[in-house]
Length: 235
Image 1 (cartoon, rainbow, N blue to C red):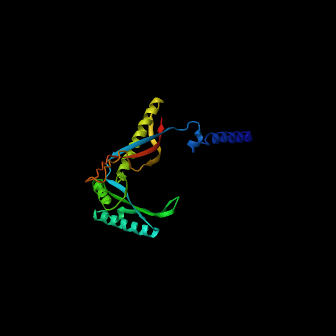
Image 2 (image 1 turned 120 degrees about the horizontal axis):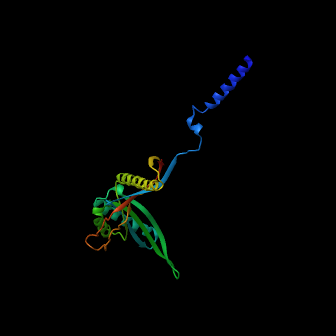
Image 3 (image 1 turned 120 degrees about the vertical axis):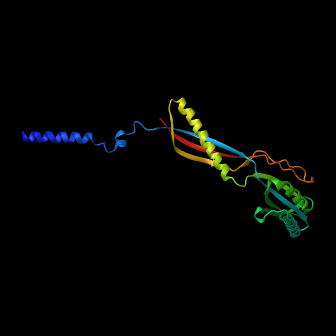
């Protein structure tokens, strides 16, 4: 009889242990049946601002009978151009040589007839001074002008504003989808930045003939675009 009671007690203890096996691990005890619901959307934000910097490329071209003469003449022409640009207030850090090249000119009937040397410099200046800088560069001997590239000097604030707008856009889209699905939008669980783009000019400058008193430069505006992929919880 005593032995039977002992066996019964052990059996009951086993049942209780099995019943309490998952009490300390609530997440594991529930398993994968009810996983949380989420929604993922992509939002975009765009900020427009007036550019304050203009970049140009000014080039000089020289022809001569020999490569040495062409290169020497081109170097002298570029030095004159750089001197004028510096006198106009362009700082050394805003001047950058882009290319220096020399090549032979030839004709099928007579072979090499001479040499051409070219070089160019990239110049960054304020939008307000851009027209005057173009005029002075041409007067100093620049034979080609490319540009302008219009940008903002300080872009951090624009990028931050664009990112905030991108998050607002993502939240708006997610809220609309959650409502359509009969759910409530919860907190953000994950965000991935798609990149805050460099300011891009969408209104180009109006460039008049270099012979005019001052080349007009219309700044227009630049756009900074940001993208965010955001995941929200839903209930």
